[in-house]
Image (cartoon, rainbow, N blue to C red; front, side, top):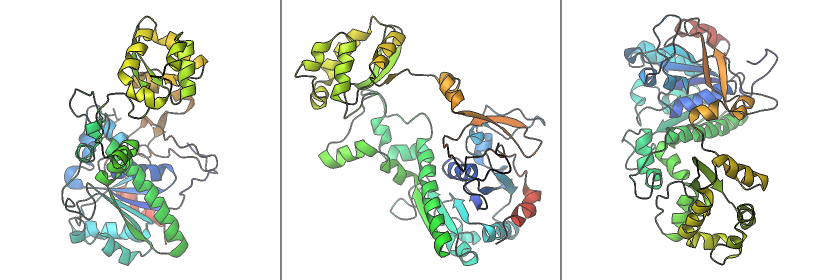
Length: 398
């Protein structure tokens, strides 16, 4: 918790959050962590954000009637929940009133879905010309697929990452978490902060158009540029790297380890400490391009080296000569490690409403020396702050 004397980077910034599920809530949670006041509008017809019911598990609350699924907890701290039905004139007026005070709006409705409620960018920017309005969608506001709804797994499929994920002889595989949603939320936050700086300097707001599929294709990174450069379609390689060898998961006598040899010097050190110095001198393996060409043969050699050694022994040997390597943790091992404890990977947050109590959440990885992130409020119960709206807005009069 921050002391009263500690300022956050976005103190005084008001965010109107019209988003749900994961991409938009990820962006607005990050803005809240950085100090913004976030008002999350939730639909009373559906008892709020869809993810409130995406469980089990659910948090055990003092009233015994939890709408706080673990999924909802992942992206909704530092927010105030206000219940409003935007299909009614009263709900629209309430949202418009908040927008008049806000610097930022984030929404992830279908393209043009808010126009009929007069809550689209064109309508709200007339009320507040400096408004930064971020629209998140599956395929963007333009293009032939603009009207197709988008979920994370659809973005991973359309954007190419599933074709690269999984075993070479296995099925296409999505990443284990909603990474397209998460990365879209991260890109959205960067765009919002850039537009906010412009608005503060000029008084001119703007609309940000960001799509799950666009961001998915953008973070194909080296595999995307591998295709652009070579014209060759990348393939699934399991845990192996397309451009670096050895960079993979290898079996040991009692489990598996990760080896990530990034250059020829590291490969020579690897061979030396594993008592196979001749491999680093062999024309087949001396340089990274040659190791890529002879990937299968080198993999056989490494598997042979490792089969009689434990993971702990291999890691100790390689760490001694500064060859990048590491274990493969379960989620439990990762989050209960000494490193996780030292870096506040899990934080305990107390809610402003008594019905929620205290919950443990994943911490924000940002470490800012002057304006640290804050954990002011646990994810709220549905509509918990509806009656406090006037009080919240009074602190953000324009």
